[in-house]
Image (cartoon, rainbow, N blue to C red):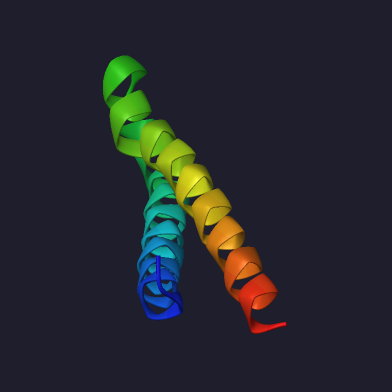
Length: 70
């Protein structure tokens, strides 16, 4: 994979992680009053977990890009 492609994937996964974290923070703050059980899991917790995976992927891509530059 080229460095340009890695950079694009890094930006995509990092941005997606940021959006998912912001969404989850909003849901964690607002939704406990009007969501419960399964809906709370799918609307709040699952996006946070996907955000963690996206951030880990972005970190791996960033480390790989930095290693290729050296």
